[in-house]
Amino acid sequence: MIKTYYLLTKPGIIAGNLITTASAFILASRGTIDYRLFLATAIGLFFVIASACVFNNYIDREADSKMARTKNRALVKGTISAKQACVFAILLGCLGFVFLALYTNFLAAGIALFGFFVYVVLYSFWKYHTSYATLVGSIAGAVPPVVGYCAASNRFDMGAILVFVILVLWQMPHFFSIAMYRSQEYAAASIPVLPVKSGNFITKIHILVYVIAFMAVSLMPTLFGLTGKLYLITAVLLGLAWLILSIRGFSVANDFRWARKMFALSLLVITILCFAMSIDVIPFMI
Image 1 (cartoon, one colour):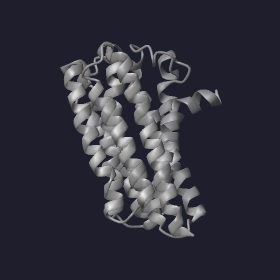
Image 2: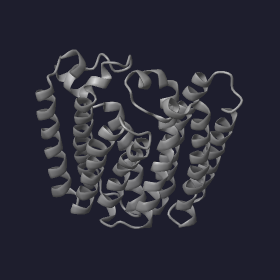
Image 3: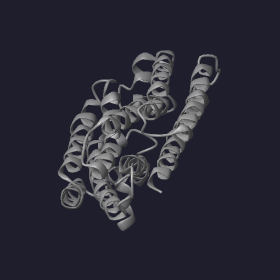
Image 4: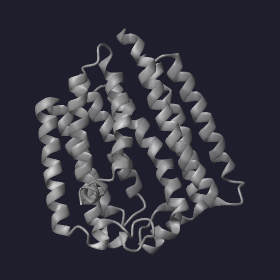
């Protein structure tokens, strides 16, 4: 039963968000890392994101029953009742926000609350009505690293803005890739993602535009003096690799296979970029 509740929190999403949070925290530290503060930030965000994901599972339970990928989730099968899930989500959320408020700062806690609201209230409901909900979801997904940045610095400055914009622009082609190779499932659940609403070709154009925008903005931390040459070179190489694969999408015969490759590469891009950002900043702390 413990494992069932744990899976309800979508641990994969939590792990991905904590990676971006850690790199933003290190970026903002610009000196000696406060490991206790980082641990408090990670724990608080863990509970907040977990709460948001459980609420999302509750909201999506009917649609999940129509999708092969999600039809075996606990709320669909009845392993956990809707009431139990809501109580669990509330407890997680309370723990997370109290932890952030007490052990980080009110700015970080407030930004976390904003991201929670956007994801649970706006994205979770709007995605059934408009394809533009993908952008709303990207905004929510870009909040955790901003929380990490603000927890370390206790200020919202250009660094926080750049981290936020980079993550928003990264998530759009990332989400579109998922939507393409799972378009039949989204159609079955009546979720109007862009490939379902406008087709793969239009989606590929959107992906290309966002990848180009991501490439440009991902260079700015170095241009603003926040990172060094290692990060800059890494960002350029990753951006070019992603751009080349995006362009190839217009000539491939198998859109499903291409979308899977785009999805896999997007994960590699953000993971390596975060690692490069962390490594590049660490010399300033020595």
